[in-house]
Structure formats: C-alpha cells, structure tokens
Image (cartoon, rainbow, N blue to C red):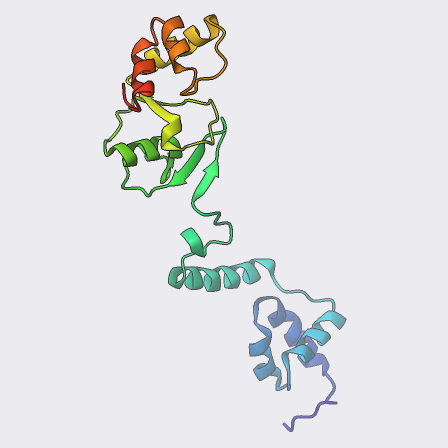
Length: 199
C-alpha cells in the first residue's frame, strides 16, 4: 500500500484503532496502520473519541523513571529539594545531614548543636547528655554558645533556677552574677567563665 498523506481511514482501520489505541503506543500504531506520523494516529483517535489507558501511561512512565533513577539517584545535592544538608525541625532546632553511619541519627540527620559539640571537643556524647545554648537561640550553634549538661535532670534544674532567680540570658559578661545567684548552677558558671564547654 502506497503511503499518502491524504489517504482516508477505512471503517476496518477505525475498528482496529478502537481495539488497539488504548493499550498501544502511537509509535507502534504508525507501523500497523502504515501512516507517516504519530500525530495522524492521535488526530484520528480524537475524532473517534478514544483515549489512552491511564494505567498503561503511568506504567510506562514509571518503568522509564525507575530506570533513569537507578542510573541517576537524586540524593543529596542532586535532589531538586536539596538545601545544603540542613533543615529546621519542630522545636526550632537545626538538623544537619551526617549520614546513617553516625550514631544517634534520625534518618541520617542529627541536631546540629550536638554534632558541632562532638566534632569540636572530639568526643561522642552519651544519649542522656544535653547540649545547651547559652543565649537560648536554638539556631546559634557557634561552639562558644554551647555547653553540655551530663543529664537532662541537671539541665532542667539549671533552667528552674534561672526562672526562680529571674535571669533572662546567660552571657560571658554576666556569668559571675549568675554564679553568685545560682547555687545549683555554680559548676556550670565556672566552666563557662573559664571557657570550658563541658561540666
């Protein structure tokens, strides 16, 4: 059969197109119907009110996407949503991507203040140890702004004493005042005043 761009569709071809169109790619239908371009198949299908099977489209797309993602996994900096490996979670703490091999990680993320304290002091914090922000700014993770409580009970005791004595902020300039006013926080005040971050 000679190809012609003006060749009309026969009723037999229309019947066959109704059967094949929903589950067959247009590139394959071009060969079956001996047409010049997939657009001709599409235009005839539109005239006949035909549409592709949605399951087939998503199945083909997912196969192609799975194959592509297997070769080019969009992790880390390759991912469109990558924001440098850090994120702020509930409670206002900044989390940093450290990988799954890091102890005490949460899906590869660790609180940045804990990670910085461990890296700068070259220690591994026990799970009960609490890293406290001196200026109460949870996003200020400078090592000078962090110190470590050995347990949560001591951390909470310190906060209760701060509230009881109406101290709003701890800085290196008012640390001696805190030392005099807080009995339970004396060890901490001396440690911070001497530049040590661990008590």
